[in-house]
Length: 279
Image (tube, rainbow, N blue to C red):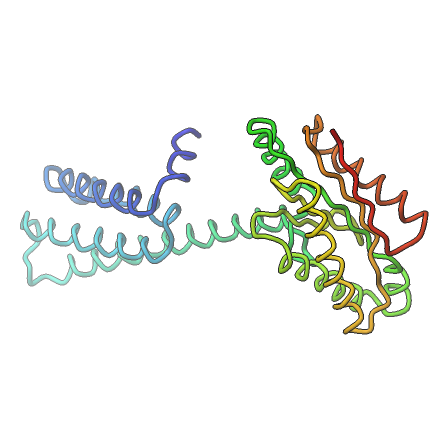
């Protein structure tokens, strides 16, 4: 597992170079022994490059492996050059290597898609609760280490249930997508946006103290309301925000406090912002 993680984190140029070195090494073994005995080992660099670099690089390595095997077979003179057998064998090996390349690339892509689906919200495309907790946990560690403040903002869509009841889930999903993309376009790339519940979103603003965070929160709310008005959607936003000077113990605690704050102000009246500081 350590080797696998090391290769996962290695650069593509290093992995391609490693693949070429393995091809040369196996070619030398082919030359010293019989190509029929060791040619199967060409699958090692083919699989390595196909999995960790990609299908295109795997195809290149496959062609190099088949060509090298063919060249060694001819140099050793085990079958006359005029005979069609070595050409056929080289073609079969190339087809085999390319098939392995394709299958590994497809498996890798499927694994990536599955991993992405498990970590992102399937309707809006932003982070889901699981990914938010993971990313927020990393930010909490940074905040503890460097003493930086941060702000967490919990947003609830007012009257969203009426949209689903009377407008249908298709309209509701479109609103959720619009809200998510509007928030993403309004905040910084380093900020973390997630859909935390049915009609609830959360934003983590790393490094922002109370005043700059308040500016961002107001801007997000104003642009969201403009977007709702433009589309004639009767949706407003209840927002609870907490600026942390000192980190909470856990991400769950941070989510629960901001969620509770949001519901407190929602009970007072919708379309409000409450922003406090936790020392």
